[in-house]
Image (cartoon, rainbow, N blue to C red):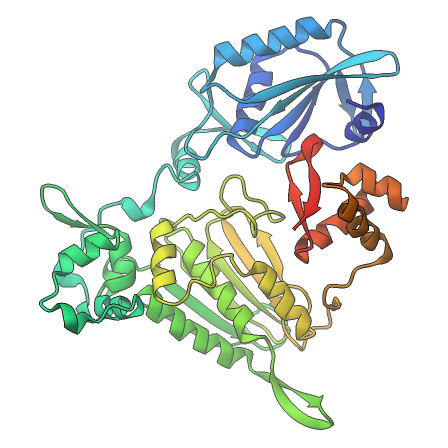
Length: 458
């Protein structure tokens, strides 16, 4: 690794995908870190550096060849399944260092070390067991709520709702009478015939006569507060909506739009009422919450309507491999059957396909940017209304520095953060901020992480 890049790396803090080790003296802890990186988003271990606070202490590795052989043996003999990784060396101030890059495993696999499973949380390695291990397996799609068997029977399903979804698929039910509803539900992936006909958990979510009998958490609670504070005194309205998913979306969407309301504005010299939030953005946020929520969690979705903002919070954090920075470009679904049926029912423009659209619509309408928060077990989107005093960003503004990055990519295939920082003479922090804003605008695409990270034209 080049010395300049290694210096930048050494100045970073340990985190979700970076760890420093003074030596190779504790093989168990090193293997736990490797296991945790493989089970999360991958990562880099730098050997020969110890952090004292935020200051790096450069101890170095005496024999880098022997160190690399030892690491290879540990990975081969102690970690299952076999991992993809790479080893590199660096020199600085007369000392040598070893860099081990671990690639994340596919979501269909998990890494184990000595019969234990670790994952990364911040700068810590967390051993998973019991309920936490079950949650981890669910997040990776190895345990699916949708595939669990439901106690519901065919007679508990509303044939009118099934026929409505067929019509949304451009099938005319009347042309296929008598309809074999068992076959139809099997074709939709919400039922299976083994020794008997079995409905899956996803069937009541869309077709139950009374969804509360089988999935009482298929609920959206909408609370309206006066002003901007979450207090009992400020609560104006509080209503719980429980229904099958298509009906729930329609009811909740209409209620939210009504509560958000409109504001007066001068347009073309005349006073007019305009929506306090773009309806398309509200629809996208609500569909994401319903489609991506964790249905094993007993809680429902909470919608909080304040004068200056709308907050939608759903059970279920981002899936493994997703972060706030990349989730809009990482196409993963906790509930693939729900996702497919929502598409069929006409709600498919949600489900994270419109995150960039949300930014664009908010900026076009003169609203602040939406906020996304992974709360650890819950996910929240915050939409600031026309009444908000938060700073607005103009639509797709490119500053002089960013224009140089775009011009650079007209002549080159990619650009790294360090290259951009050198070209425009800014700090690494500012360079990352500039390039990520271009990614948010859809002008650039980020490829890879850490040492391999670079930006290309979208």
